[in-house]
Length: 152
Image 1 (cartoon, rainbow, N blue to C red):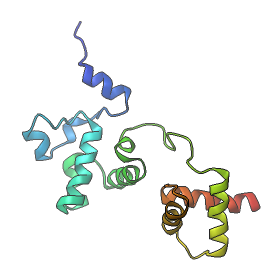
Image 2 (cartoon, rainbow, N blue to C red; image 1 turned 90 degrees about the vertical axis):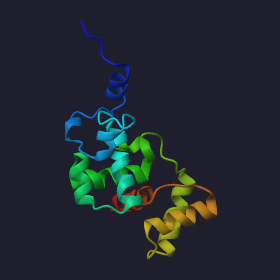
Image 3 (cartoon, helix red, strand yellow; image 1 turned 60 degrees about the vertical axis):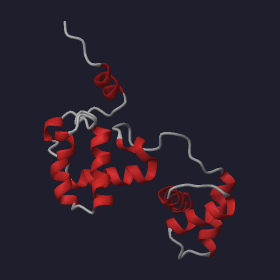
């Protein structure tokens, strides 16, 4: 009986196994052994990099890397929120505990109450500057969305 390659087993266990590597037609993956189309995280990362650094079209990149435009934008959002770990498949949602203490949540709510025009991004920036707590803007937006649910 043939043994599975350890890398394939690892990729499968970590949610990084690309089930359709044949769809990847990007030249990097055809020319260099370093680039492995079976590694979905690497494929997504290279797709994001090609747009961010080379300015290549999302439509063209999605096609070359074997994904839809929607997958590109979902990968970008996941990467911005969780880094490379966000590119692996897995359960949606937070991977770890929420970084905001109840005091920080109150600080966010108070700031929003006094300056409702501030965006989630601006509040996150202020939180980092004033309380040295770094969170993604979506975390702030979720906190503010929960205010209406609790009060409504």
